[in-house]
Length: 459
Image (tube, rainbow, N blue to C red; front, side):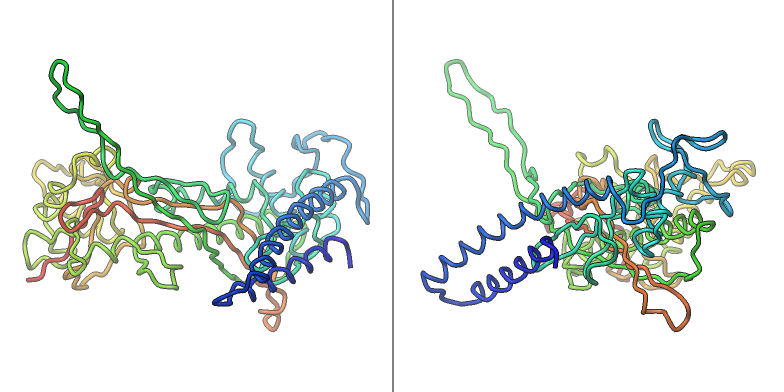
């Protein structure tokens, strides 16, 4: 057993002992003292583990059990990275564009593919490639209530963790999330260095008072509340073909990155819009669950015509009512939020039926904008063709950034599960990420918040 393994085993034992003591209703003075000693030992062990993992990462970069000479320099026609890129099959979907200081898309996809071969399949040449080009293999795992990163792991340590994906791959996923996902693009982003974070939130504003000559002024105080975020773990398991080789590594990296991005975007948007505060969404309480007629918030604005409870029935008056009751402070940056079906059945129907349209206008298409405000589309919003949405939010209007915070911990992980689909000659990849969403700006029963909802009528 290595020193690092012994240290992890000791920390697991201390954590177990600490949990046992903490579960007691009335611990003795001696037991309280032991809990303090365990806490000090865990902090010291964590610091020592970090020093060991940093040292292991340095050794990993400097030496190899099966050394392969690194490329001396780029040959003619090779990229600046100094290695030949296999011809890819088809157009890349996830690795696009090239920001200043960034490598070309093919190079980023190839590096991501080499990471997958090295971390998931233990490919010797790929592992050497990662060592030679600054991509340490770091396995992140949970031990008790704490998270640890183990550098240079040759394979998965347990089933509760995964290899941290390289920067090129994670950036591609994040770019995809911001384009195709609503939550990360529209909510206020809150980077989280730890699993929990408390953000101050202004609940009032300063006031100017009249003051006479020689009279003391009235003190105006800013009111603040607190918004808590806890980055919970989310997991996705997907099957892939087991026939992965050097020539297909770019296409494989692109496919894996796209699948992870699509799954993450759909999950995050569903949490923001539809979460009901249950364990299935880690306790997140979404917008539509709160802006309902039954909940009683002022921002749940019923359709002007009581019988309007489907998208085909909503009219301009229904939409304008949601706008008219919106607070003035949130109009700057306000948008409409709806499904693709609502866009066509409500907004584009109303625009096309308005006066002044020509054949040329209709052929050119209707823009995603209504009464001067952009329309954002998300699959998480309702899209029933004939569904009766009585008392339920159908379309949202307002400033999402002022209404919700999105907290995330950087560090998506991926792990190979070899046995799950072995009978069908497939492998399974497990992706994990950590995030939380706090919807805090929906107002009260007496005043609308920074988001209002067009709610189906009850006629």
